[in-house]
Length: 401
Image (cartoon, rainbow, N blue to C red; front, side, top):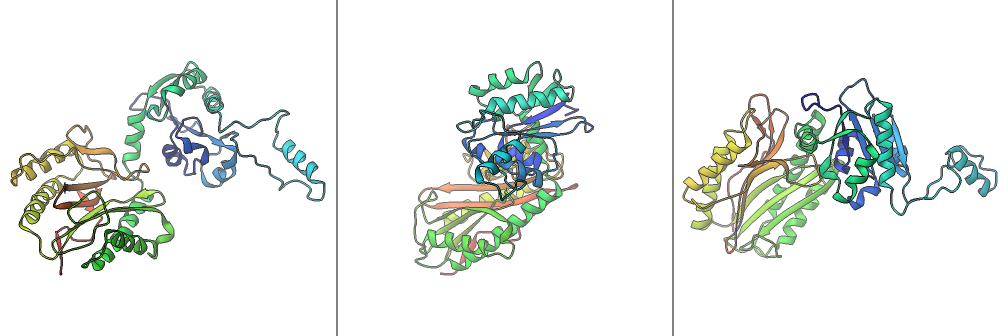
């Protein structure tokens, strides 16, 4: 924030709320509209952080987050706390007493869902109390729609608002030790599933059956209690895009999978062939491997992501396929709900690798009439190079028929 010349950050998206607070943003964020929750993080650490939360989740927020300055917004769900009320008095009196304790005003009415303008007014109060009501404040512009941005700016007042979307993304790009541990465990769990899937490949086995083996294996992993989700893109045979094909000799089995540990997703891709690969299969996979090896040599601090894209693409083209093209050869992990997120290993990227980044590096090719192929590892950029977090071999693995 100091480098960007701003005095604080306003985070508005559910993902950024969780990232900054360590607490769930709650159900009011389900519509994807800004104003259900918010976080203010000042540049000056002497000033306290603050969060705007749904009243339904205020208690759980206090238990989960380090932030103690909490402003509540009512949502549509009626709640009442009878813990400090005499249980022997009539129910009507209990409820009335609870509402007095909670300072519920006469005529209180809950909104249809939530009131974004109330959230924004809380933010204005937070800034004014910290003497920042005319400061330069970055906000997560990507999280707020054109429909809501005018109300947001009007509520904030004379603050000099600047788009800090990229700054927030860069903050998330470099992982903490806990985030790295989550991603490392996620990829380890996913690979146990890949090993089980590999052993299940055989004649007549369907795509859906292989996917089920993978999912059952990861869900029964000793550390599965940490799982918060799992996803798979498994394909069998000549159609790389889906369908419940059955395994036959010569078929490619493309496995692109990930597990989520505490919300952090892994990403790994491997390719198998049932029996011996055909000449074309082997030729194409060899080109992908040349690209992967060439790009992997550059995965270290200070190297532009765009240079990795250039070298990887050049190696695949030099291997005999000058028309091969791909928009990116990998992506960040662990800052959002998707398996592919900024920064991307693309020709347009202006990012340099930094220690602490966790990335997926991949060389895929999807060929109708032949099948899907992918080589993909998850990696951690270290102080001197990179650590590949995967243990499984990268080769086109032949499954005996």
